[in-house]
Image (cartoon, rainbow over all chains, first blue to last red; front, side):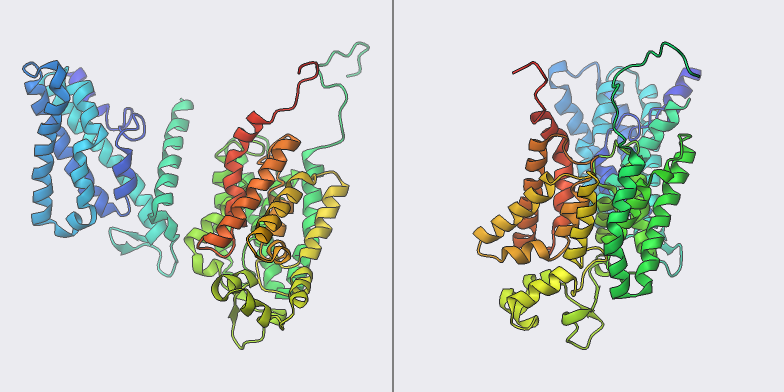
Length: 196
Length: 319
């Protein structure tokens, strides 16, 4: 039971996909302009990641080794299409803002990385726990980056003004702000580990 | 503890060079330029300079205290950095914008890289680049002075902006139809611009102070200004105007020469200066901005490790 709990919790912080494994940096940089977008991206990724881990783990013994990556991609692409169409139908504004990056979940390094490194070697139950943990870890990282960027760059949080009358640092919602925020957070995570 | 046998490692012969001596010399060299700006633009400019210096000193002290390393604000490098940020901002800008710039430059460009001696990029220029990207309108609104103050308006274009938007003949006409009147205004500092870039004469006075105290050498400034003038001349521009206008004087003498972010050897410094001149020319002529000094120096800062690798000094005894 403890090892199962470990599969679930390792991705949250100590093996966080963004801050430690450094996978999936493109969506982290691209969609974290607001917390709302980040939640849309994070939840979509959790859905795809958990189901793809389970499915890939279930077929791991019958897929020939040489064509495993194409097989994984087909499974992931099917799940991404589901997410993409659901978002477009029920959350059109989020779909409009980050729709392109939802489609790009197909080639998201976290999902392919977990499929290759974990789901292909473990049973579906453990793969699901791993997917949930890693997905939530990804969402936590997205929330941190987008929270900082939205407050500093747009003076808003969830669309509400934070400091009335303050003119935000507009560059923080642009690309340089994304690199700056992510870099500082990565450095801060490393620093907190060095001190232990 | 005096002892008869004193064993120490080399070097045994030391100069009296030290970080405080170098940095405080630069501070003194910047004083004429800053003082003239205060005379030209008013007391608010003095307040801006003091705010920048205070932000730089407080930020550095706070970070060094937090990192539990010796607090070295008395060596003057933070004061220089603050003054250079102030030199790079318009004289009528809202006061908290340079505070953000100074903080970002000091905290991210200097201390995230390990503090004095470890920073890749010039902290003052990173601060300027950050607030220029964040508040572009504030950073390009100028107070009118001197001959340029012909029109009845609160803001004016710098000579380089006039050149970019209306061309050379308009510029000359604006300054009374006489090329030499334009040069004179630029040289004395009778034009709009950033706090530190108005008077070429006073920048040269400061440069003279630094040269006399051997804080800087001529390699970087001369190759920088020379390349810019040569390229401008070849491409049918006005070379004297090119080196007198805008921030290139300030950049060439005070910021490209920063010891930490420039090459070590003479050859490397010449290449570095020439690269700065080339990039400044390209940005001014073909880029979207009227002035490119700060970006040119920052881009060349990034090449310094590479330049240092290719242009090493010959080791004594080898070929």
